[in-house]
View (cartoon, rainbow, N blue to C red):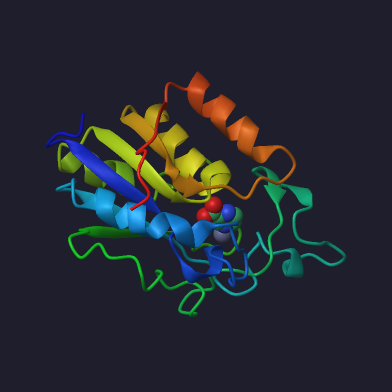
Length: 207
Ligand code: VGL
Ligand code: ZN
């Protein structure tokens, strides 16, 4: 199942996405031991890091009269508004200290542009701006993305969907992910992933 052309993509295991953080994913910290243990089975590991400038378009605080978890229409489509989170260089944006993947070879930072969000590790929300991850994987002959991390229904799902869209195999390991689940987002994400040919797998261990 895991082979030389497999890559583990660890999505957004950052301080702001665990309890106590600015955009806490319930139980988010509890995936970290499993992610660490799983990572030992992969020769190829890539991390993503949500990395927004202060005043980013995805922050509710950037839109007068708007509150977190409301949705607005931007040029590129609907955008959920979030509490300020993962501001470039802040402690909240740092990778969680318990994440232990010294053999990870690449960190992709995304959502770096003021006016464009990016849940996906591959393509930003304008659906045009590439992060470079697809090119990196192709250059290295990596064909199967195993995706874990935070949050299942946003950055994990969009990363897995884009992996399929860009011609990679994609598997989401559901017990090494946790979701935000706002407005039915978790069920929708699993339906979309299934329709796109993303495989859903369980580790079955609590590391
Ligand atoms: C994420 C909402 C906003 C995520 C990032 O990592 O799933 N969700 N920014
Ligand atoms: Zn974000």
